[in-house]
Structure formats: structure tokens, C-alpha cells
Length: 424
Image 1 (cartoon, rainbow, N blue to C red):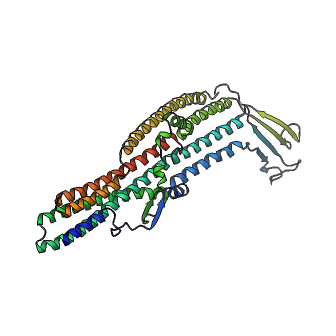
Image 2: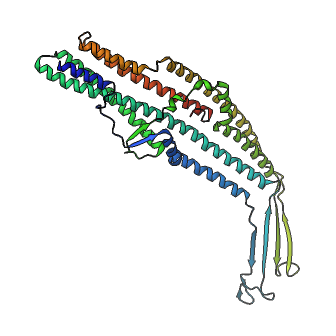
Image 3: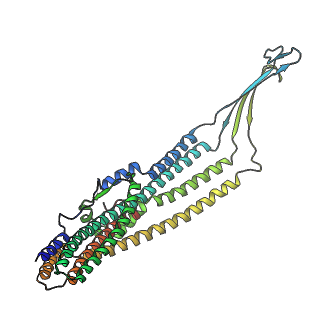
């Protein structure tokens, strides 16, 4: 009778006894908290933000005018008077000039436009990196969360089996339990411990990735929490495929980057054509007495003659860049359409599978195990049958956790391929 009571306790522990061991965690982390840490502390985002700021600084450079140039020349040594640096009219000589380069054909404005387009491209690169890393963060969070739930199932069952094994070994000494039953219990226990160890190793790797994304200290122990509304609020059928495709065309940063790349090439072509037009340099010169007449003042102009170099090579390169950008945009649009279609189709498949599961599965399973306990207590089923059912409970719970993760990951993949937060 004592052994039966222990087995009854085992079953109750299996369905969630408060006496089961719990993971010791020190930092509770929800997905919104993780995203706040991610946006604020992620090193990759910070580095990309610096590159964006650098690109914006190029606009400042493009707005600057060329500096004027000043030149001065003085007599070094007068051999007649044996004096250095003479500046008097009688015994010295010096001249000075000031010049200013004037850029024609709107080169300055075209440089400003080109730098502004470059800054937009840097911003789109930042947002595309943000889109990619956010998907990685959310997917990693869900994977770690459901892995923790599965780890709790393993720990509950291992604790329960250890209790049963200890009691059974005592009963073995009294001759109330056969050795083969002890071996079966040990076999299941060792199998569970091996599976738990593998799961915990994977969980540690997943949590490490999560810590790197959010810049959480490596030694911190995470306890992930999830709002139930994240699961219940996701309804795939509320968003038709065409609306997802339209959202992707509008919001995906990689598409915007490809479009802006064409604009950049077009602006560069305008600049290179303008560079073919020579710039003018104006100068004002004063000479004490080295020119005719004394106290000479002259106005000069310098203009290169575009006889050989008319910037033909750079103009051709800019035209080729426009054609290359158009091809890259078409390729990116094709990638986008395939991404959206594949993600939507996979999400539909996962949703169909999820909806096919009975939502009362876990509670029904808990009720069923009570009936199994009664039958085992009355010797209507064997220990093997009882342990098989026990193993089925574990496998079904793990399968449900994995399906929930795949469902949440499918939601985040749609957000990723559309470049928007359609499903929160």
C-alpha cells in the first residue's frame, strides 16, 4: 500500500506539483523589456548609427565653399645693399595675390544632393539592420521561452522519478518490488536526464545569443515571461496576403535602399556631367615694382580648356551604375515577393496545425492521468503501461511547446519579410 501511495504522489507531481524543483532565475525579462534593451544597448545598432552620423556629416562638407588662396613673395637678399627682406620702394621688392575658385554648373548643389542621398542610404542600412536583428531577437526570445517551459517539464518528471526510484529501492529490499521494475524506472530516468541535459545546453546557447543582442551580462540568469495576449492576439486570417505584399513594398528597408541606390547613381551622373564643365579661378595681384608699372595691380582669370579630359570615364561609370541599380532593385523585389509568399504559406500551415489541436488538451490529459493512476492502483495496468503513459505526457507537452514556438516564429517572420510590426 505504501508503494501505491508513492506512485500516486509521483503522478500528482507529474501534472505540476508545487514540490517540483524550479529553475533558479534572477532576472525576469519580457519581450518588451528585451526590445528596449536591444534598441538602447545593441553594439551592432550603435555602430551602424555612427556610420549614419558620418554620412550626414558628408552633407556639411558638401555645403562648404572652397577657401580663397593667398600668396606672398618677398625679396630674400639684396646684394647691393646687403640686406635681407627689403620692402621699401628704393631697395626692396614684393608681390601678393589672392584667388578664389568658383565652381560652375551647379557642382556644389549637386554634391549636396549626392551627400543627402548617401545619408538616406545609410539610414536605410540602419533600418534594415534593425529589422534583421529585431527578428532575430524576437525569434530567439520565443525559442528560449518555450525551451524553458519544456525544461520545467523535464525537471518535474525527473524529480518525480527520483522519488519513485528511491521508494522502489526500499520496497525492493522488502521484496515488494521486482528488480525489472527498478531497471525500467532507472532507464526512463536516465533517458530523461540525457534529454534534459541536451535541452539545457541548447537553452544556454539560445540565452547567450539573447544576452548578446540585449547586452545583458553573461553571468545573468534569465527567467523569460510572456504576456498571454501575445499568443491569443495573433490572428493570421485578419491579414490577407495582398495586404502583406503591399506592406512589404512600402516598408522594407532593403527595397528602399535599392531604390535610393538608383537615385544616388542618377545624382552622381548629374555631378559627373557637371564636373566636365571647367571651374573658373579669379585672382587679384599686387606687385611693388617687379612689373610694369610700379605698384602694379592686376585682375586674373584661369579657366582650364576641356580639350582632352571631359570626365568621360566617370560619366560612363555613373550611367552603368544606374543600370546596375535597376537590376539590383528588380532582384530585390523578386526576393521580397518570394519571402512574403513563403512566410505566409508557412504561417498558414503552422496555423492550421495549431488550430487542429484541442485547446483543452493539457487539462484533458491531466484528468486522464488521474484515471490511469486509479487503474494502476487497482492493478488494472502494469508499470510498463503506466510509464509509457508518463512518457507520452512528456512528449505531448514538448510537442505543444514546440508548436507554439513555431507559431510565434511564423508571426515574427511575417513581420520581418513585410518590414513592419503587423502582428504585435
